[in-house]
Length: 332
Ligand code: SD4
Image 1: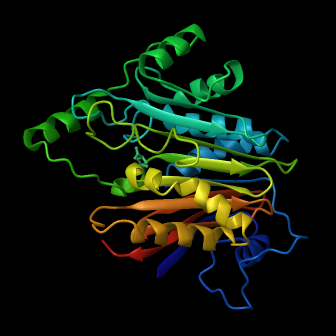
Image 2 (image 1 turned 120 degrees about the vertical axis):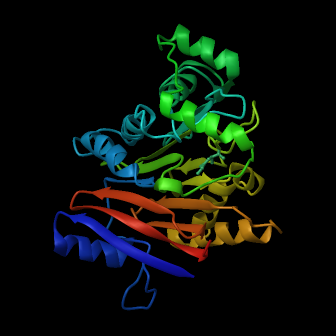
């Protein structure tokens, strides 16, 4: 297993060092450098999210968390930043389309009361996470898909928007020349954004949003809108989120498994490692099978792990902001 940690900005070095020893995906699991925080060091609020784009998303989430806002508002507002960034080609506006040129979005959100909402195969709406929240709050259902989700979004006041930017259209046209389907995760270090947070009151929430695998079959839905696969929150225990090949995450009920492992005493880091091991053991062919998990428990301890090298997460807390390179099992 390999790992590398990298601090990109530290607000208060002393505190950051303390938290690194007590709460992070530690490289050294010796007794001198425990990854289990004691009950007295509850780290909150805290927010973590997947990939490099997590830094900007965390900033928006932090605006809310640092003012005593709820984790639910924080994760929604946080991932909206990534959804609305036209330069980001794996989430929301500007996402790479499916094989037939349609940008189709998947998203879900979950709060501390186990309320949850999701949209799948949603087109022409820039912020699917906010539609998912409306599904959660304004309907008796958990998930709406396709045309029904779109109609619902319009009813709720969302605006129809063309999500296929020139940049993504051009990439798709280039891809069409060979039309070879090859999932490419890690490229430019961004993909699905998954965000999990604890607020000042100690409540957890999570959000996950994506345009899915580039050039997927039309109609394909991944793990990201599926509660228990792309995201799971249990306010008694913790929260987890997945990125990578959605089919593998669905097959192993990835995020639910991470939370269950924490329920049975694993640290977030150990739980992510075991979920990755499960992915590896259930797949004979691991070619391009990148999957990464992030996890956070009630104490604010967190962890992350991936099948292949290259996965990283953004972490924001009162005293520091950092990127953590996940530990992993294999080089590409
Ligand atoms: C999916 N899990 O649609 C998403 C894609 C992703 O990193 O996360 N890529 O399968």
